[in-house]
Picture: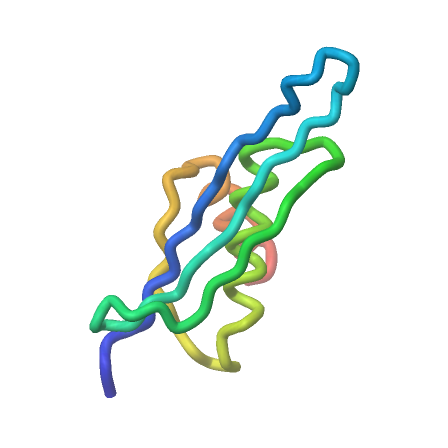
Length: 95
């Protein structure tokens, strides 16, 4: 059995520069790589309603987890302590 796949969470802030259009969105995504640093799977999406960096991080983490096989484990890398704390809080409720 090889090493656990690695999930890297990505976040990109995009704000419309047109002063007459207050639309804001945040791009988010993730990649899953194997122990040879080969991309196994990748995904990107956009949040347009009430965008926030935490929502972007949580969406990317959730979507990445959803594509894992049942029982599969992975290492998830993110720079959002708020997202990590939120997931730990929810996990403690379900224990």
